[in-house]
Length: 149
Ligand SMILES: [Zn+2]
Image (cartoon, rainbow, N blue to C red):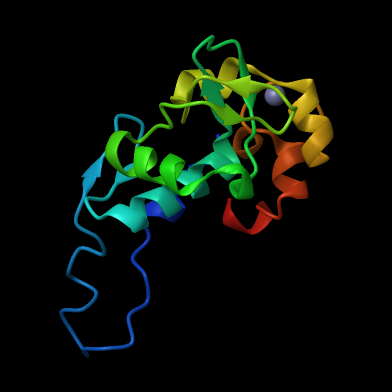
């Protein structure tokens, strides 16, 4: 299995400072149980939530399938919820057209085992199947993730 979290841990290239720069932690924050990262600052964590969402998709309260939400369908209020709760705890429109009462980033077991919503697959052009796009070879290709294995 590819180590799909490696990218998140790789230090960023920093232009300043000959030494020390690379030794400093890239970001202050804490690890989630499955290797994700939660940052303390607001905007940054909303962007990061969206970054995870793009590749992991989301689970709704029903926790039955993996759905997608287009970034443009998240409002400023949704972003605040991401920043505060690392989840969107208010109604949000899914790519398949349904409205979910809340969405969360799925944990590793859900990412591996749940079916992708066929409506969301149709809306995004990804093939229907099992697991987060990040964990599906065909989706990885379509998302241009081949280089990050
Ligand atoms: Zn869906």
